[in-house]
Length: 112
Length: 110
Image (cartoon, rainbow over all chains, first blue to last red; front, top):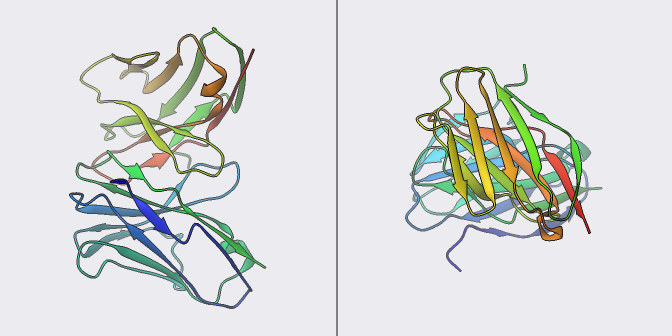
């Protein structure tokens, strides 16, 4: 499969715990994006990398959230001290051209 | 301020009918207008996209109509099928990450 992959697909955690998600983009894509989607809403932009450089962060990305793309390939999104309001689908997308984004299947996070 | 307004919120269409979903945007700097299709529990899938140098683009049963002066674009699904039942999102980009509309839940009934 040459599409965007995300791991895990589902994560259930208790409030206050830390969680980390991984995204593997399409291999030739140099841009990688993280979005969050809640029920009944469209995806909302969180942050964006071009190669290993984090170029943009949304104001939605509180200081409890951190993202990395260490070698310009896969990326991780960590949420520290999770809150119930963090429950959502976390989507990763990659692109070669600006805007032409291909999404992964998402990681569904449930915070109890 | 909502950068992209999508309507309707939900749509029920008879099998074989035409489904029409509309989006309006404010910022004239946007230059890429995709539509995504999302099934429950899945990530959004790029369906069709247009750039402002053309007014219409057709791919199979899916057509985008683009009105630059009105800052509006729409998705038309011809001969709608039950398998088209999904949530559709318009989005905009201006060499920036995508900004999405709130989605339209389409149900195609036999």
